[in-house]
Length: 125
Length: 367
Image (cartoon, rainbow over all chains, first blue to last red; front, side):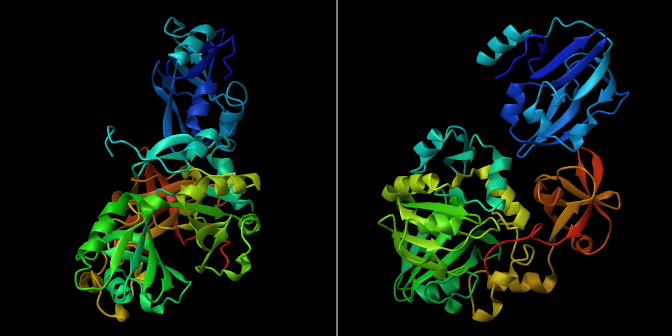
């Protein structure tokens, strides 16, 4: 189970990479493994405004439909539209090519998120 | 199935655990939904000409013996059992008085006085009670052998080659929907060239005690264990009906497009009169096959829409890796089975679909 040290994590199993006021979202390794083979990703449109905890993307595996929730609020500035053709990248490279969307953060409060150590403990519980 | 119901285990449960199978409740059993390979790769192994190995022991087996076995089964099942020859299997069903499905089954003719039925797991006790309740005027014995029998499916291009390593009977002599009673790894087995995947392959009935060794030998020979998720993908891509989805006690063979296994000219049978009148009055709903022309995955219970209103419902749906699009089986109001622009409502968005035929992808069964 991979949990990169430079990311932050939500209880809904999304990761966030903060770079200035830009945040990149994706699903954690744990999430992609639990979902199984991902065959469809609905990417949010650019310009969409999401609150923390809003469903911002839909991820479908062979058997199930799941929402992905925004870990921090913001406006979507870029979606990883390549996932429409290659949804399996979420399974293969969840922290890299499997990223889902980038947002311009409107509230940089990250106190509700976990660092890698806390997320690892959270998964053990 | 309520949470506190104790789930049954098949005799191969320990094999599934050893293989890392992800176990889920299914029809009262703990069954592997997938192994570490994952549902997609399992599906691909079967489609790509390997041999997929399925534990489908949750399914039930019923032996019908006696001088009246034939007239009994003519009365209880919809297909024409008089047309079966020894060593032949056919697809059939059990109907209630209302003409709707109690179950869909396969019937094996062992001799003029002995038949073997394979029934769905979830319907097992209902089917057995139904059959036994109707034996009164027949010289026939109905025996539920489900608990003593392991059913394996070995499906895919390499199935025959792998299975042949366990028997001296030439499997080439078993035709499509034919079976043989043979020795498999030294144990008695019924082996039929049947399946639920659209690939060449076999279904294999063996005693519980023989199952572990046969499973392991097939695995060692290169068979790929396949879970329920891939099994459902394989059958949906073929458009095969699944009880509880396409067929149930609320539809008749008229709606389910299963008149081909409902032989109205064979004489009377249970449910015949109701099917006759449903035919005369016309189906209330029609089963159709759809493929999406836009991106999306249709799933069970999604609504089919046309002319701005709901006209039907999806019973099975998936993303077909081979077709490269979403495919679905659905029941729609009869007029929309033939005309009108259809779409499937996916999270509030009407995703365009067009009517097509099943199988959705090429079948490789050996006819």
